[in-house]
Image (cartoon, rainbow, N blue to C red):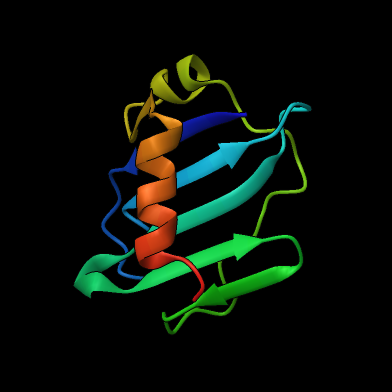
Length: 98
């Protein structure tokens, strides 16, 4: 498993500003947390999709392999980095499903 943080420099209140996610051995997201302006949160895992936001679609796992960190960082609207499993688990325990 790999763990990533993506900071998305966008101005839309309907889009997440920070995304942290777990990537499985085949490169697909397995768990994800999204953080929006105003403290709203979304999460996804397995078949569960949830978001506190007033958007058309809840937070979901991508059906495509996750881009590499370097690929994200080639786009100036993104800042991506690896995070530790411990950091991800701490965030998941605090902000994920109860």
